[in-house]
Image (cartoon, rainbow, N blue to C red):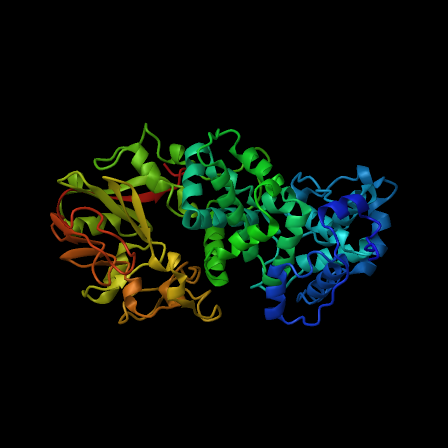
Length: 564
């Protein structure tokens, strides 16, 4: 067998060791369903020539802006931009944010070429302000490019993709930060054990999750990153979330029972990823990634948009030179022992709850809205104190000292849209929990059992400015034009029945959380008695004694730490 014809930028010995070539292969079909299967199987992973051909074809088919720089542009500008500087001494563009250029299996000529290409991209894309993933992308593409100009054109096409539903790489600090928040939300839902570990040992858990792209674009060895990139080019950005979640699952498994220090966990994960070959093969990593039953691409897009909106509202759109303003308030800071007081839970228990809430709200501090001991045992007063606040946390303490509650995504004023009748509303971000005698959270049943539903089309729902009720009798009503369609709104899903989407309801004589086959929580109008049982919406066990007397009720809102 003839040795593969590596480009002049590749160190042959390193490449032979990292990705042994098994010779040329043919690819007869380039239809998406077949490509998706072949990419996941690694069909072209051990054929240098075929991988190069596939990259060329897939990137050529990306729908791009009308004017997208090509190889000819690179040849015209590279001399002017690089000048007389040696390639090795060239500065990196600001948008890479001091990211080191991974060499993978490039020789010194290749490492210098990456710097030249990045500088030329910076010249042609002044709108790209923050893109730390790009050095790794360019370095990988250069392995499979005939020359610098070809690699430049491929990278430009990835940046210039004009399909709004086909996000490829983050190109601004706002997009990057919201992706980190979105990843944190996904960890919270799909890697709960790992998330609890991160919360327990990290001084700032979002700063750990903010590293997730670096795990893929920089720390993963070439043979792993190339396999991820194969699938990424076919399936898009969602693949990156899948693989990063799988990495975190493997890290948690490998470090189970071992001590972790708060000041080293970020570096520990990086080291684990660099040495991942000691733990899992590329095939097993992808197998784990695609075993995760993730939200649809539409729902992830809505979550990303909601996170972007939260950051914009806080004025966080660019990276600060001195300090990142978008740091998630670590639960020990958001729920501070000196300024937190509840008649129902202690600081530790509230921190448990805060570790479960979506990232965009975990930026906030708890604000007491209602306390039965302060405001009286009245459901009417409860509504009065809570209206205008979204989301809220409901806490209940029984006379048997049991503690349970719910995270409620939607303003209680939505109940007024039913004309005095009891109707359900809310979204799939709602969840119920118990804290005493043991801690347990129950999320929307669809999150753990996505087979119950199929998402409806993106075009019909993704940007509608409406608020949704789970009641079949409730018509959609328009809200302010800047309101996004809610993440996990039930109209995005084809549910077999409404019983899986009965989140919250309130009338003058009762309050209900969860429905279908029972109620997760029912509280009477005097806030005196309640009951709990299994319900279809959360697939939960009773949260406390099935029939209980109430000792105290509290409702908590979310306050921006900058607003005191």
